[in-house]
Amino acid sequence: MPHYLRAYVSGGSSFFTVALLERRRCLLTEHIDSLRTAFAAVQQQRPFHIDAIVILPDHLHCLWALPPDDADYSTRWRLIKAAFCRSVKSGERLSKRRQRSG
Image (cartoon, rainbow, N blue to C red; front, side):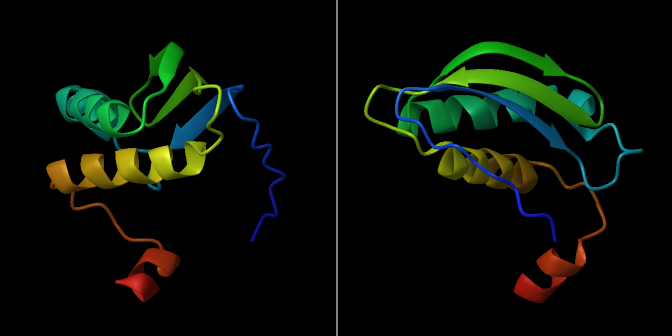
């Protein structure tokens, strides 16, 4: 398991790349409306500003700015991923970790 060094800086800007488990799938572009809805719902709960975003079929890149008193981008990503997955019946294979956790 990789050990990533994550910088949590209140009010900071961060660059992210998020990829599908199955890189041959095109879920992000095929279900772009569901992805937009997931982002919008999380932005209402936990505000953040999207400075830039690129959506490709199997991964996305984005640059966010968080509020001055907030450094918690991890929870935002967890909520976005959960909302998107719930809205898409993908038939995607589960990773071993996701199989163990149910």
